[in-house]
Length: 139
Image (tube, rainbow, N blue to C red; front, side, top):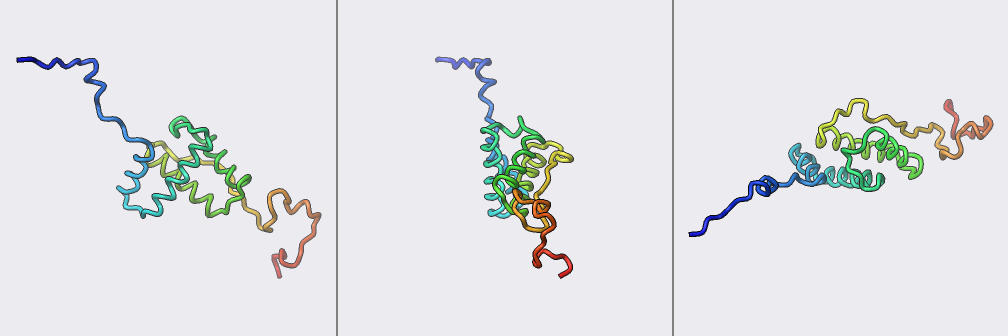
């Protein structure tokens, strides 16, 4: 009768692997009974965040990279405020609920708000006081 020899050195390495990041995100979303559309949207923004930062793992990144990504969306991609909020919500969920990092004070960025509707390259000051009728606050 032949006995099986278990090599303890290699046996300890055969523990189940930790799920991949996006699988962890999906599990956390499903555990909280979020809608399928929310899951798809959060996964989309988390992937974009990772690719924006050259495929670095979010655990290796922090406030600086998050702020750069959100500012990139606002300034260079010119996305709407609602879209910026979606991206922000996805990243907050990732850091708070999946990676379990303190999100208080983690996100500091300025959402582009422009009461006149000018593109960022033409701030109202460049118009030297010119204000067409549609821009008047009283009218």
